[in-house]
Image (cartoon, rainbow, N blue to C red; front, top):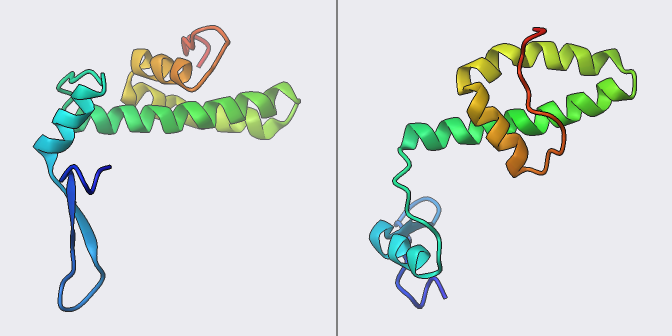
Length: 111
């Protein structure tokens, strides 16, 4: 589908590995036609959200270890606090929900 729709082309240099060049406008038009909202997220916001999701996955792992009584879970949680503050607490909580977290919102009050 993507190749037939002209969303990308394969570039084969004389030397080195082949790679794919994605056409931004065509790809954007296709995604919009499929119902994906175009919300104009900046590259920085996208990077922060990606980081928030990584932290959210680590948080869930640390929380599970902590619930099992492992001190490693507590250590992991304490080391994440500064990173969570960097991405923003609201963004971090959104990321937690997006990956299926069912617990209460994280507040960092006790940290």
